[in-house]
Length: 271
Length: 274
Image (cartoon, rainbow over all chains, first blue to last red; front, side, top):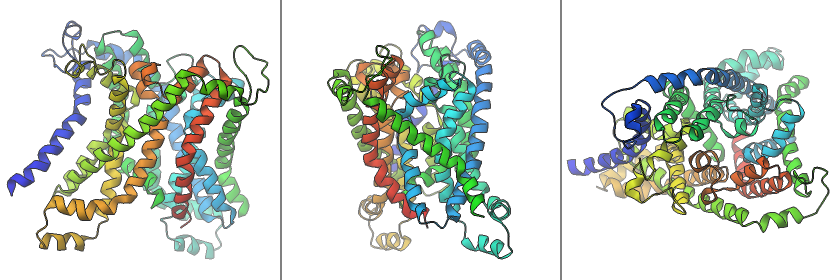
């Protein structure tokens, strides 16, 4: 009996080790002294912890981390809020056109955003927003808003209609119903959508890459710049990757529940 | 009252119109010869598409993207199913939740960071690639990086399968237990057959992720023909200012995605209009 129970645990530990390996290599690589970087494989830890590379890279990344936070956090929170407004409107709308509208929005949202690279870059260039933080923020928003609306809509349909009907009888307008009756119930949904968008905005590489000439507009671009620059010095690249990964990873640890609920909502579309 | 609702959904309308505008832009310029050589473009009908489909690099990118879909869907679903089954049979709820989150964490890392780590892990000189016979060289690179993408995304399938497993009627499990059925038999004959929905959803998502593949191969091997996908091809033509070709390539990406996206959007509708 014990043997039968042990086997699945051993298998899961084995597969689990494969999931730990990259984080392990990342951490020991970032802390490795230069002399050992040149001579030892990435999976062999050093007995001496060397923080100089990590601190130097952190200094180089600091302004870019700030830029990224300034772009991503308002964008994610804004899109989540605008998404909740749109979702509320769709939920309340009585027109038959609603079904068609939803499909039209969903198709645009789920088509690969990478296919829009040429028109998106030209759109930003024509408005003087190419290679600016505003351009990247706007680029993210264009894709985030329809996406956030669809996610929010699934959360909002879980609210019982009676909540709204009670407010309606009292003669409240849509603005008041939304602010007083619906919004307070959307707290967890808002956290889910905002967490999901913050993590995906922070980690987005393609949009900043397509809309930038330099590497200082977004953290993923900056991390990528070390790949070409550092040659074989993997401690530099790993330091950059580690520092860039900490904010989304910490957010995932703190609000993982909400992030996962967001993923589940995405997958529940067909249920 | 109507006005308020229209105002609420205005940003949604504007962004959706923009997205369709981008789509129309791609379609329009794919019928021109717009490029760095022809800034004063003219209509050329299907000539750009003919040029595109006769480019060996595009053909290779198309085939690689389709293979990427096959690998991610097949191996990703299998990995997700196995990990979900193992987690499902862990007795403690707390541990089940911790393990689920643990297998999802690669989704919270940037693909550039994951790419850099795996690039070194698979390195023939400094990584475990030494024991695997240079997995980033030649044709092997495609299989290696597509398996790295399985590592990134299979947590999502794990989550979807677990969600369906938890929905299985408890009484069915109890009666199987009373009949003395083994855990493996219970999984294979009762639990897994009831998770078809997860298979469908995971397949849709994995197909879309594979079609979008860019960050991971780009941060591991740059624009290497061995791992060049359709998005990478489009990006390459975009940076070289062959905009008509880039647009035509984008239209091909959109057409392939539409096969998955349109049925999914229609399927989702039932849930949204509840």
